[in-house]
Length: 62
Length: 449
Image: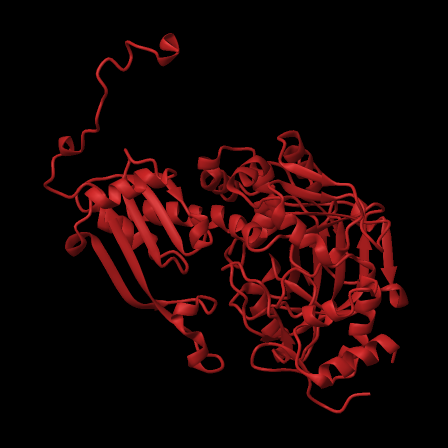
């Protein structure tokens, strides 16, 4: 897993977040790199949602 | 001759309705910038995507929709009706610009496309301006418009919750344990988008309706990896399949056409096998909610005209106002005979999920809100002229139907309201004679300035 994907997982372990909140937390990252990293996080099959539609880590990841 | 996406951009630019943005823009900012522009937006340079350009908000106003349709703002419904009445079959051609560049196998990578992040609560970047093609062995080809949410470089979510022909195709494929092949064309003329938005009978080819709107056949090319055809002049095409997993993957929220953020939904996954595009592609971002609303307007208005005619009521003008998202409200003026104000209301309230209908006489300009208010003030007695129909079919994204209380799979109902703002029976028309200024035609203000 890339360092950015690891940071995204850590962000979500800390608290549930909307996708845009994750983007805002990493604004310096090139958009394409962010999307690739998000694809890696998706690939972990660990994402879930809370009642407000925010992403959470729902299963053991990485 | 059939027009393409770039022709639509040219028409808007010639009318002063396209803003070119020359500085490089991050795709995360497309939507916010488009929302601030009075015109449609064209992004000439995109940060991190040197070979791409992007356009958005093409038909975010009634004026721009009318420009794209080559008619007056009052005539969009009749123009649309003309198109669906005179379909023109599509034509298969051997090649087209949409396949100038082909990415297959390991080259398939959705992150190489400048996908926009549109709203603060969206579940991810979205491809909103889609024309999605599918096929069923029994029913044939279907074309619709479904949003796609980026998941991974080779997968998106797709909103297939609402009832549609493609949902039926997918269910049939799912029952047979096989995936459903689809192709997604992005960057097509608004006529193709209108045809895709139109809920045509299952045996009607939406490409033929687009051809009817153009007055010329839509040229199609065969896809490279699936047994489907797409418009040859599209900017971008995604080919692949909906995985046979049913409605199990999270998708959304997304900024809906109701101007409200929707809920997370459970939907299938689209796995992309091939991406083709023009050599100098323009990504088309359908700007929510306005552009989605205005693409609905001719469809709903045409359905309203048809419903009135079936009810033997003569329509003069019809309008689906943007305040009702061009979907929930219909306002019509009619040439009324006794009782037809109510007949017209019943007809209009039968259209899709229309929940507010207002009917006026033909002397009222329904495009002028002040005239409409005047008619509703002086031609209505609330105990005679207001209809309320409880328990009709509603739509989930209307918060007032309290869909969240229905449980998974529950279908909402709604009350429908009709307002008959025609001159009441028994009140002479002369009672409504408007003020006229003495000597109005004899003097001119300019002569006294």
